[in-house]
Amino acid sequence: MLLSTNPVVVWLKRDLRLTDHEPLANAIEQNRPLIVLYAFEPSLVADPHYDVRHWRFVWQSLEDINQQLVEVGGRLYIVYKEALEALIELHQQTQFDQLFSSEEIGIDLTFQRDKKVKHWCRLNHIHWQESPTGAVIRALKNRVSWDDAWQKVMRSPIVDIKLNHLSWYPLEHVDISLPESWKTPQKGMQTGGPTLAWRTLESFYNGRGKDYYRSISSPLNSRSACTRLSPYLAWGNISLREVYQDLLSRWQTPGWRRTLIALSSRLHWHCHFMQKFESECAMEFRPVNRAYDAFPYRQDAQVDADLQAWQQGQTGYPIIDACMRAVNATGYMNFRMRAMMVSFYAII
Image 1 (tube, helix red, strand yellow):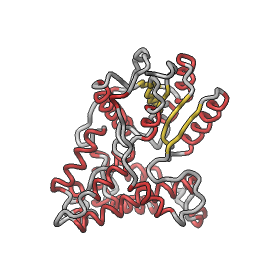
Image 2 (image 1 turned 135 degrees about the vertical axis):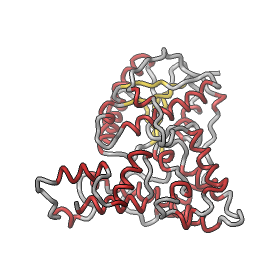
Image 3 (image 1 turned 60 degrees about the vertical axis):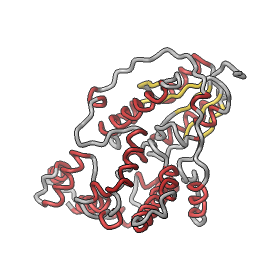
């Protein structure tokens, strides 16, 4: 029996899944009608950090989640407006007093947005409970004991989501106008969604990833030998803990130990670098190495043309151009090539 008719709201950001999802689990425990919100925020859509391929991936992820929710009588509440505006309107309609979300380890624009949401929640007596993203610790001063914390989080039980126990708050469906380019799959690009995240992981262990440890740096072989989970982890279609515990379950598989060791270390790096950005977020606006503040960057008239040639894969350097054309066509480039591309960009 429901204890209250006021709903609780789960605000999705970069956690687009229905498994191992602490905010969703916490909301379900309230035994109230549920609203699961996703907001396409115009400020983020306009930000140069994002591209149509990101929003296409997000839309595909939301469609996948909706297909799963139909089986339990629910659906996402998707809007095209700033998150705070969407929450204010929802509050006016429903008087919700509890909000659940994951912490977003993102750019300053998202952090400033979250601070505004936090202030609004306080003014309106709304309890906003944020859950950590992976093993990233907000406002951590140093990483002295961080490795131990990472192991503890990654080995803790997967959060159980009881979708059949949900009661959905009756909201009218909102028709939103999205660019057709977001809704149209692009050949060569990975498709978003939890379903394909798990299929991608399964295909890795079904054979294509067995030589991962020695193919990871190869521009050609890495395309199939790597996990190809990066976009799914970036948008939270699958949790890092799910991937890590799945890896541990295969630890004794004959012939896979070197690959599992290599992959395990890189899963650790995933959170390590997110933690570094969380703790040193000013790197969005200045070099990590302050010596580069005084670097003699080019200022000549050819700079813009050279930058455009780099972006389009027309520099005249075959390996550079091949990498850029590949990432433009498929969205993928392995980490060795990414490092090379950035190094080249720094000297053009």
